[in-house]
Length: 124
Image 1 (spheres, one colour):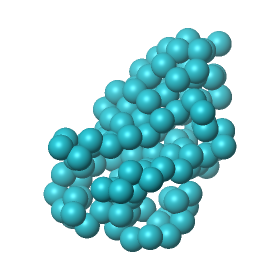
Image 2: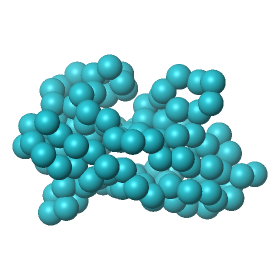
Image 3: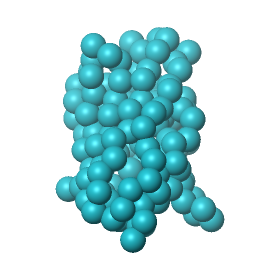
């Protein structure tokens, strides 16, 4: 079992920055990747970014590429999502998620564990 605890988020004006963090505990040695997803009201959950646990490779959704950066801290068993140049359309509840096998980065069904949602609100 793996437990994920997310933190960070909040409200910011367009153009501002926020940082999310996801702390992993439990059987972290079984992890293959940790990703971030988001869900806006009335919309489906969508992929944001992923990082391959212990290897550092990353993959981003086109909508956030160049503005968001995902990174990991092995010593802290945590993954951070630095969000810059935020836009109102980035407003959503953000979730970190972890999977234990290779597969689709962007499909939420591939992820085995989920953290609690974190609200991010970007005002115009």
